[in-house]
Amino acid sequence: MLSREEVLKIAKLARLTLTEDEIGFYQKQLTRVLDHIQDLNQVLTNKEAFVQHVPVDAEPFREDVAVPFANHDGLMKNAPAVENNCFLLPAIMEQN
Amino acid sequence: MSLEKYEAVIGLEVHAQLMTASKMFCRCPNQYGSSPNTNVCPVCTGQPGALPVINKKAMELGVRAAIALNCEIHPESVFARKNYFYPDLPKGYQISQYEKPFCTQGYVVVQLKTGEEKRIGITRIHFEEDAGKSNHEAYGTLVNLNRAGVPLCEIVSEPDMRTAHEAGQYLRALHSILRYADICDGNMEEGNFRCDANISVRPIGTEKFGTKVELKNINSFKFVEKAIEYEVQRQVFAIENGEKIIQQTRSWNSAKNVTEVMREKEQAHDYRYFPEPDLPKLVFSSSWLDKIKKEMPELPQQTSARFKAAFDLSDYDASVLTSSKELAKYFESVVSHSKNGKASANWVMNELLGRLNAVGKEIDLSPVSSTQLAELIAKIDSGEISGKIAKTVFEEMFATSKDASSIIKDKGLVQISDPAALENVIRKVIESNPSQLAEYKAGKVKLLGFFVGQAMKETKGQANPALLNELVKKFLDS
Image (cartoon, rainbow over all chains, first blue to last red):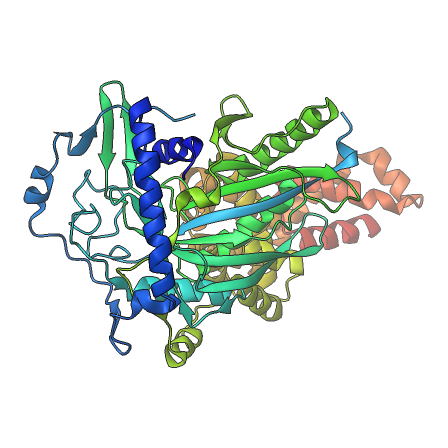
């Protein structure tokens, strides 16, 4: 079982504030996720498995040519808020 | 405080932006100063489903850096995801390299002020993408992703440096090499070459490292040295006071000349690195590596050796003149026009660099062009002006950017090499100093210098010194 401290640390890394109930909930849920990964570890013994889908002789590089993205406006419209062409987010404080 | 009982252990991490036309994993322009969020696309803004494709030129520049820094290049390396949450990192992770960087174990040889050389080890160089920029305003945080995905090489040194001076020299050497080889433009103000320093102190004679403090983003050579000096003193002072050094990240406050705490140091495993599943293993073929080796531009040490051999310069002179690519180019241009290597070196180092330093300008903003300086040197060599007058002319050139010939003409500074004109002056000087003449005649021949000096003064320094000397002697002895 994941400890309460471990859950709080993961929450901190994800910038989440958890209620007491949620701490207990994630303790159980994250433990189940980790257990599942343990199970997978027994199956996937080949460490290189993650790149197996890439053909060995494929040219993996792109030539260095700059091409601006064509649908720039569409991309900016995806943002919930824009100010002075910048993505506007809730104020971020330096975390201590 | 007993600073001398301690030694500092310093390692530097440098982030150098690579001089590519496009970003590391997408085709957006790699361009500083564009209006916010113009160089963005689905890949560098982290849109779902967008996939990265590796920029070949970025790989080439990284390999060039590895060669220039004497590293062992690994034909196979792996990109990794470094996970952390911050708004300037839209994907929630940075593509970097972790367990398998593309090169390790290099070194740089740096010149110390004592005249000694020191070899600073390089642990590794790895590729990674830059993050965007965030501006914190009271009403919110403004994020500009133009820089997100710009290719970087992170160059990690061994903890081989013991003083702020050594760290400064290492950084200068690295900066110069990267610029020579056209890997990074080195612009520190634009953040294209950034430095973090890891610093700890330990009692001299002990092996064990002290607790290290990380200094973040110091953006000039001078600040790096000042920040390290301050930090070393702070740590020694704390230890001497019985305090414990806390592992933390600090930043340099250049207004107050102190380092300040930034945030708790996140442990490496907090980043939860894992191999980037969207990219294949990075494989360099030996033929491609050979091609890059063959096409390597000249490096500072090679330029320095060439200057020493061609222009008969000392180690020191050659190292100064090759300290930046621009300066080396300037010097070569001066020599090619003046045809006098030694004089060109002296003029560039003693007169030009001194003045540029005084006004805080780099060589590329020199008010005197290389051809203008060459013309001045040629005029000394041809006897048109004396070395002394040349200094006056140069001062004027530096102030006004005018050519030497026009200044000489306007101010009537041409050297007087006409014996008849000089003889008149000499006669006058001898007549007005009868007692010195008597002493000279009585055997005090050292007074020759006095007469030459007086005559030179009369001509406002314009007399041809060799000719003047000869004529004065002739007059006195007649």
